Length: 231
Image (tube, rainbow, N blue to C red; front, side, top):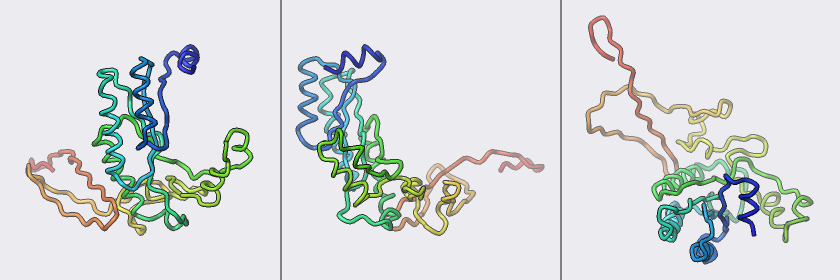
């Protein structure tokens, strides 16, 4: 019903789905099975997950990679079209700036990359507002969006409604005093050192609980002084 009109209008489009909310259930596996058995075009599959567990994010990628193996070289791409941390029973503004949220974001990104997901889309860029009248014409229960976007906003976004910059935007060591600049949206280095490296190198770093630290090793440009010494 949908593939033919989509491709007749835009032949370069990719078709798939289903952006399922319960990725651990049977809906998406059954959808994959039907598409394969009926030889329906399936360019990608997609799902959502809100969880603090990096392992859970990675396990779903692994699960669907195995389910897609029968497609061989024509394996559909795997898209996580919404992902973030778990929903909290209480949501207050202070929680949006907790280092733990940045740590969860970083660990989930690493886990999904290790599991070899094709695409992932963090939810979301900017904290939204739910306008009830706009949802009423097409939403069976618009109260859901009103509740989650107005009454109990979860503040998952990288930016607040008044352009507040959240730690998740930086996903690095969360030190409110000096780790980031909200004005320039740039990281501020905690320490910069010039070092001489052997093939095996050891580095010690303090990483507070539920925080994220970034260590970057960059080669110095070699220059020769008047004595022939390289720096």
